[in-house]
Image (tube, chains in turn blue, red):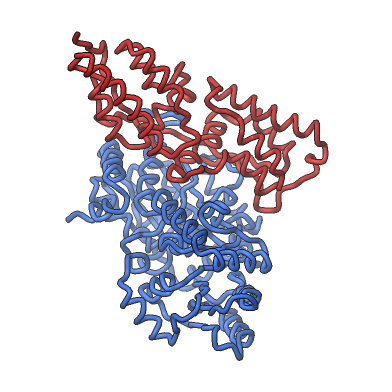
Length: 405
Length: 230
């Protein structure tokens, strides 16, 4: 069975047919995705799924990865952080290494496809090949650059403006640019280990693995231990709820090896939770089935981030039909329209009220969860993402707002 | 009597890609100002995309301007007034644009304190626009029965395209279904009934069901009158 056909029971035949129809219009075009890593990270994860699907529907797609030494990737990490709004000093010497590596990659990597699709800043300098090739170039920014360090963004801007189109994940990430900017949200894969259906026994097994009893409502936040995810705020929310409803809290996530702050956050979280046996702090290795099971075992899922790129954990929770309380930041308001698919909050008190409402009104919670699942089915699955990429490729050949294909 | 249409009805559909304009409003004064300047594709996007994005929800959320006024600026009165703009009554995007501006400007005039309300940082109104890709679906009808059969099978995107996108974005006088039924089948009364379906206050499947109900009733009448080829 073709891979795409496996999505039909979830999204319906019409969605699959539309993908074939669009790919037919791109039959004579070649697409070349380029990013900086073949494994690890959200971009590689999505390309690993997306490129085989593009090929399957007849699009001539390939995926190349640029090369770079440790020094280059240390610098690109700093550039990434600066674009996220963190304070990072990028010295002229660092920029020199960045551009020189760009030149080396440009010499080795032929960007000859009809459409070259560059992901994130690392391979941005490949655009230097454009003039000689006269093909179409897209720059896809996966980063929230709404609070980017101006100096760093300004350096990159000189390259961004040479692309034919740019793509951002949320409206607030857009900048004033003299090139077309498209909004394409990331997506979740309903067939992946993180999102596929699980039998109750598998869920129970994971709960028992972590020593969690299913004897009281379970509030869960799945996120790495990072101040921007506000895990201590989540504990405060739980305590405010616990005064009225006997419940338990699960804070599950990993720490990033390259982030010394995460160990400090984990310590602070542990000390804040000390003495309460109903708070489960799970430092998890990467395990998608465990994340899936914990989300499915939850009564309410929280995502109380202070800043968020897109926050796909929200789509993951909604896909499982769970009622969600989440901060109105980054891409979260695209995933939740307040009181339709879940509840948005702006504070610890607001989140606590929302969680109480959901726990006290299971029918209301269930209705929000069902709406949320449908919202994700329509708007945040991989098939929608694939469709929008195909439309994006077609849009490069027209400047009209209504295009007959 | 054998009623044969002059031309078959070709079912089209459309898919949308959202383009960011970089235009952003943080107050109602800004919003009204930008509403005058942005493209018709922006007005179409913010008054229609929600219908398709939330086609399974009953009741549906209001249009994006109404939601921003209510949820972000906290003025439910204005939100209600913006949500109450009857899009069915407007023959063009231009007319919807004028109606939106009028509601906002009237509110600013009658309640000047609204001028001082700012959206919180990060919750400004971002003007987006829809780029539509229009294509034939492969379905076509040459009789009322075939037409009803197609309606039961085409995608909801196709129904939305012929019900409101063709009317407003392509500025056709009425929805495509009514237009064809009247012009090709001479079914003026049926056409008028379909034109009364309000696609903005029901789910996508609800629109399909209402359309089919009207069509099937007419087919039954024609059959009982002895016209086998409805």
